[in-house]
Image (cartoon, helix red, strand yellow):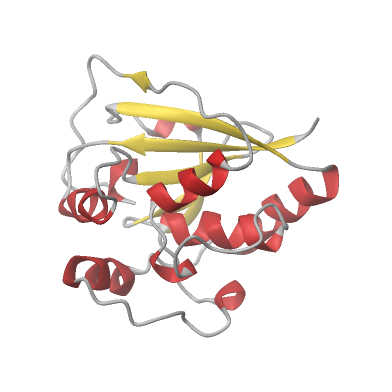
Length: 180
């Protein structure tokens, strides 16, 4: 059966990562991105916004988990088409500030056409657009990696994370995946 592949990641190298982990009530992941059929990682990061990156871009992860959510061919096509259509959009730092402040201001109007995304909002919107999930576990704009993982757990068994014994230090001028 076809599927869409997601990558959940954690690092400990940024304030944004710490804010996201704080909003997740104990889940260790601070970033989620899609793995495209050609093996690239497509997601939103603070440095660069929504991009498709080579899988070798990330050397700073401390743990990662791959989840394959079952999908029909049309659902997988819709999922990846939605993500591709968002390449080039900026990262939604306002949503991160709202997470840090604890303010839930509600849904941004017309989330499929939003002009900025966090990593989790991007993946949640793609899952909803493809019909893989029927509702968001949080407002789409303020969804966290935990929300995405909970939604995926309703679709498929969740495996065991891989731990990186020697994560590289993230250069100060770039964004590691944990800075989702």
